[in-house]
Image (cartoon, rainbow, N blue to C red; front, side, top):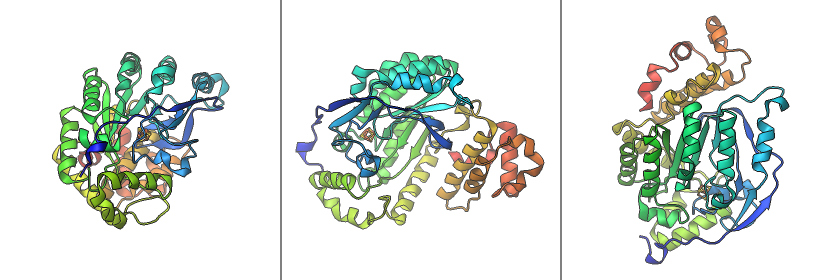
Length: 387
Ligand code: SF4
C-alpha cells in the first residue's frame, strides 16, 4: 500500500561540486556483453535522481557527500577525453567499439547536465572520432541530443536504453522520485526508434513483491514490445548492508510496511546484498516465460553489433549470452568458460579453425557454434534461445 503523502514528487536541490578529473575512460579487461562496451565513464559522481534502491549509495562506490544531495561534476571531462582518445598518445590505439555512457554512480542526463552539457560535448567528440555509443539513462533529457545521436548512428552506431523497475507511473513515483515517469520514458524511446536507432530496456532492478509480480512484469514487457524495443535485459535488486539497505528499508517502512517481513526473509546478510537463490530463480523463471510469450530478445541481438566487433569479441559476446540463456533454462553451460578462455587469446579465431578444441572449455558443440558465428555472424541455436 502506498501512503498518500509520498505520491507527490520531491526533488531536492543538490549541491554541485566542480572537480578536475585526471582520467575519464575506464577500459574493461574484456568486452562487457551486457552493454556491448569496452570503455565506460562517469561524467558525474553522485546522482540527483536519487532512486530509493540505487546502489551508488553504498559505501563501496566511495561517492563523496550525501548521495542524492551532492554531485561531483568533472568539469574538465571533455578535455581529458580528447587526450585519451588521441591515437598519437597510444601505443595500441583504442578500438572503435561502443563507448558506454551507462552511469554507474550517476546518470549522464541528470538535471545538472542541462547546465554543464558534459554528456552532449562528449557525444560530439565521439561523433568526431567515429566511436559508436551506448547510452543508458532514466531521463528524457536525452531527447535534447537526438541530433548528435542520429549523426553517430548514421555513421557508426548508437544504442539508446532506458532503465525501468516497471512501467507503472505510481510505483515509480515512490521509488524513483527524481526522474520522469515510465510513460514519458517509453515515449522518448519510441521517438528514438522512429529515427532508426536501436533501443533497449534495462528492466532492473525489479523491486521484490512490488514490480516482480507476474502481472506487473507482463505489463512492462508488453509495453516494451509495443514501443518496438530491440531487447530487454533483466535483473533483480541487491541491497548491500549499510547506507543502501538502510535508506531503502526506511522508505519501504513508510510506503509498504506490510512487506518488511518478506524482505527480511529474502535479504539475509551477504557481501553482495543479493537476495536468496530461491527468490532469484523464481523471478528469472517469470521473466523467461513472459519474454518468450512476447518474443523479446533477452540480450542485445547481434544485428546491432556484429559489424562493429572483431571476430574474437563477437564470439565472446555470443558465448556469454548463450551462457546466460542456458542457465536461465537450467541447462548446463560450457559457454562461459569457453568465452573466458577466448578472451585470453592473442590470435584471431579464424586462424585456428583446425585447433579450436585446444581452447579450454571448447568441446564439440561449442566448436561448431564458434565456426557458425565466424561464418554467419550468429548461431541458429543462440537465436532460438534469445527470444
Ligand atoms: S538514475 Fe541510476 S544512478 Fe541515478 S539514482 Fe537512479 S539508479 Fe542511481
